[in-house]
Length: 338
Ligand code: ADE
Ligand code: ZN
Image 1: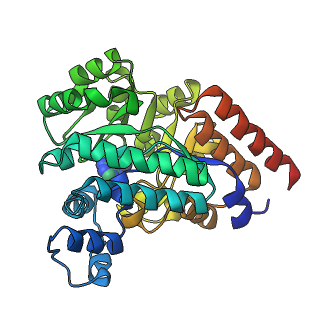
Image 2: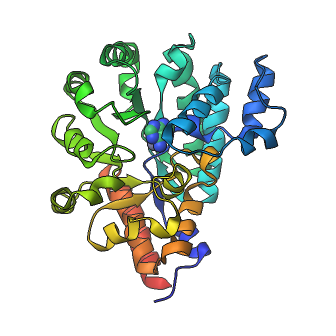
């Protein structure tokens, strides 16, 4: 079967379910914000910064990612960051986004929760108006910090309770298992919020099991190491648990040595509900459409497979039923016409 072409891929209505707003900070914007805020960066130029994006593992990346995020200081900075991301989404045919932000990265620098929420929410509203892109925001805890720190963060976010739909768990996975956050995730769910968690990116398959059983997550972020545990693979298929896979991230962070080694299409063909996402596109060399194309080019992707991936992204989202039906109808239409 033929591979799907890029223009049809672009046209398919798609949702992005695994995206860190701080990971959309392009080097050019980082320099602009650094200058605007009187911060000096340890790089001479945009090129020098880009050249530093050569990661051996997740921690290598996180060190630069947290350093870069320090240029975000004002409400306008968070607005500019978020709006630039949405503009790229519009170009890629993304109709709905569920971005993460890491409030602790900013409150630790005395940037208030209000500053962060105000800038991000204003941009999400403008993105809806300009490009029709809907959104559900996800607040994410940093797992290298203590559970107590997450509890305080949740308290600080309570005035904004109506403005985010779920809580996630990200940062350094190894040595920071989901069980460390069981009590605070109980509090999160008691507030009526959904839960998701990064698991099985660098960490073992057991972290995926913990995320499901202890944190009661409705999606697994990454999850590609599930393949090492056949019983877990079967469970994920049986329960249709969505996996938000990030192909370019996985190759840039050496989770897979090369895209040709990636297991996403194998998992898809086994009936797992996998989705394609960009994670931290400014650091990993591509936004959502680039990720679809990279998988297609290395592993092959028929039109039927691409439609299934787009469908998975929509049905795994937190979209309301009416909007979901509209997007699925459009997807079905495109699936038949070409
Ligand atoms: N924070 C931003 N990107 C991340 C990733 N891929 N894994 C864990 N934490 C992250
Ligand atoms: Zn991530």
